[in-house]
Length: 323
Image (cartoon, rainbow, N blue to C red; front, side, top):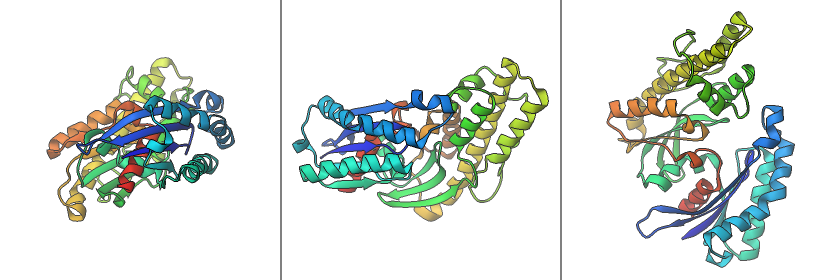
């Protein structure tokens, strides 16, 4: 079984071909991603109209490149998947309409995939993990703790009441005059800083429900930055390190609470999985690895190329749906 997957929900245009091996594991035959960072960096964030136009300009060539890299023709496909949301509506329409056209021409089934489901099932593509497992889905637009019980069978245990984790990283980067995208910039600066210099709050710590809140932490950092302005490079590094340390403490605490309630909903978890763009943050990964070790669980995170938006996770989710 082999599926072509298209991803255009934000600022990456992506096309991938994923197949199902005889042992039941997934194999990525091609995964082409074209980033739009250069187009959006001047604005410090994604401009929807610019993103949509950029998708239009490259989607057909990117599909051709993925098919060529996989060494197949459309007759070799069993289905065509596209991310159908959530996301920026202009981009979503371009990827989905392209997939519809290809489906009509080739007669292959069209699989409209929820972008979040693509992230939720990535660990099954990379590690062949069985159900159920606890997922921390953390990105620029989403922060959720989810019990993944099967394909299409998800129970959201917790979410953010304001900012997503990735959004908070981006806003902190913009506040401190760092580059875009903000997450990697904050992580880089944090590696040079003192995480104990600023006593920042840990919102929602100890609460019985596994929800997140990041807006107060972000405001506290802004107030510290204003208090010691003008900022030196050391100040910026220390602020980033203190912010990141607070986020890690919150993530570990909230995930620990979700693990306590998991068994009542889904039984014993097979693993703790982190996915989404924020899963690329190595400090957050290490914090979750410690938590998983305490709980006697495996901690799984995708390879870095599969943390961000890409076509392979969409193709795999489509393949899971198709089979």
